[in-house]
Amino acid sequence: MANKVNFREIIIPDIEGNSTKVDFQKQLGNQLYMQGQNIEECELGKKIYFTPKDAQTELTIEEIAIVRRAIAGYSYVARQSIIKAMESGQEGE
Image (cartoon, rainbow, N blue to C red; front, side, top):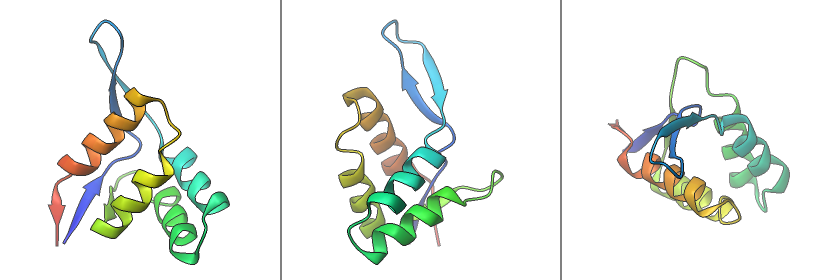
């Protein structure tokens, strides 16, 4: 089982409570690929980066853990929004 995540449309609330869609797909994919400590992280970076525009990235539990580590340096609001999107992602087969 995997969660489906659209990293191109992460919903981030602003200070006034309004929601904005932010595209993290290329940034996160490139970060994982360029800074990956092992082949799994680099391959996940490519998987995220090259997910077609009309599709969502399917992540396993292990891949979600990798993304969580990768976004540790992101701002609190961005990090929590990405985590929420990964945790609430529609489960696939």
